[in-house]
Image (cartoon, rainbow, N blue to C red; front, side, top):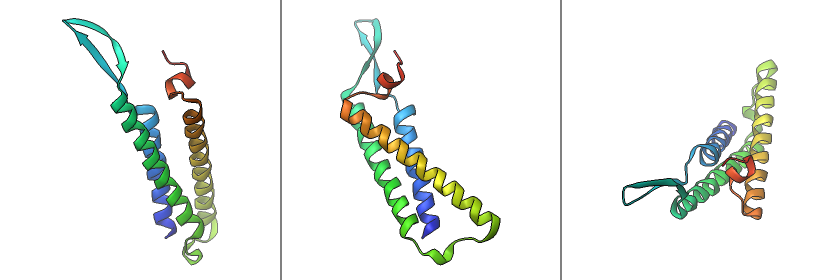
Length: 118
C-alpha cells in the first residue's frame, strides 16, 4: 500500500509539473497570410486547469495512502531511512506545488505572470 502511495505521489507530482511548465496554452494566430504573435486559447487553458486538478487529487491520494498505509511493509536499516527521507522530500515538494497552484488560482495569474515570462 505504501509503495502504491509513493508511485501515485510521484505520478501526481510529475503530472503537475507537466501541466504547469510544459503544457502550452498558446496558439499561433494566422490571419490572411499574416503571422501574428501567439495568443492564449481558452480551451487549452481550461484543459491545463483540469490536468492540474486531476494531478493534485492523484498526489493527495498518494499522500493519504502513504500516511495511512500498512506500517508492516516498511524497509529496515539504512535503506529504509533513506526511503523515508525521499518520501518526506516528495511530500514537501507536492505540498509546495499545491500551495503554488492555490496561489495562482486565487490571484487569477498564470505561471508565466508569476515567472515574468513575456
